[in-house]
Length: 319
Image (cartoon, rainbow, N blue to C red; front, side, top):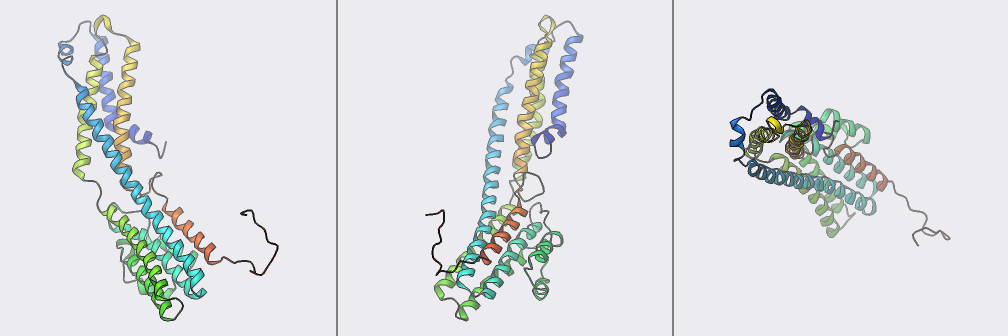
């Protein structure tokens, strides 16, 4: 039930109002033995035109929010990918202590970036106390002195902490070049990866800061609130009066009304849930999985050890 459209459909008052309107009209049909004059008037109306317009806008809205959702998923995976790139470069081109420091700072920037999303849009469930501090203590990302240096930023309400940590990463690379560990070409490659990470994180902030226009969402909600009751009235009056009444047809028409409610309310809820993929809904992006997976991959890369190159007789299943 949780994490599906059933919860939104079952708790939406518009669905129950629409069904009650249909039931009330059909109960009225069985309490009288004549055909109301309203039946003749409703035969001249065409509710399907309004339904066609609503269907078009709902599907368009879902497509737009789905594209937005996938873009933000791509940004999240890009952040993880750039950190893995840096970890591989640091492992192979930098002294262990220098590479380890760079990777620590980069992972800290990754986590701080998600915490900073609280400052914009609809916020996020990831806080400094229960998210950043947890992984910082677990992975030993920043020293107490480094944490003190960052304390001037409010991580829960600003992305500036992430920005500074990214700059620290760039400084780490520059220091490595000055110390002679890498040349200018290698330095540029490191910087390109770091800046690509920052661009992906900025993309998440940009999308979160600019959700779909409220006017658009309000228009769809208003159109739904007008269409569904009208559809219930039209369907109920078309189900038969007088000698044309049939319990089987009433049930079938009632099912059609319910399915129309599921279609309209379900699509609308689907689209609105995809607007903010960094929330706490079950279908939102798994930020915790991205962070923990990236940390685990970095541990694997930084701890990688190759067998003695002079060893002979080694065979693998790759050849």
